[in-house]
Length: 120
Image 1: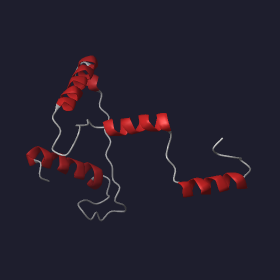
Image 2: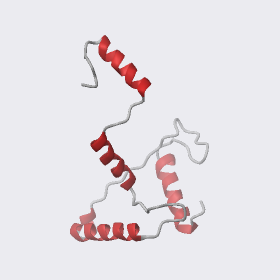
Image 3: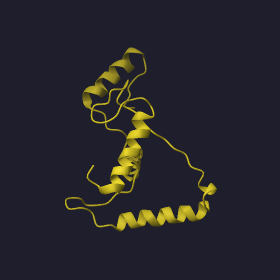
Image 4: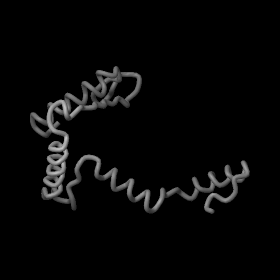
């Protein structure tokens, strides 16, 4: 970890709750059942503060992130989840790209089970 003490602390937190807490190992070569641990948390924001104020400040923080100059070699700074949201919007607008060989296999299955032309 090269991001200083905050990055180090965050990395340790993620390791503990994603891998050790689930029994799935840790480090570059986890020794648990799988190498796919995860951690999820849900917070009742209103137990800490006004939900409306929180939403306003999260929006303000997102604007702050977007106004940050990108690192050299990058065009834009994205906030967490933004890339995935943009991809979802692209898929909704243009559909999911399927390789020709995969499409042919799907069409063969559709023909086999009498489903007709999938491109219709």
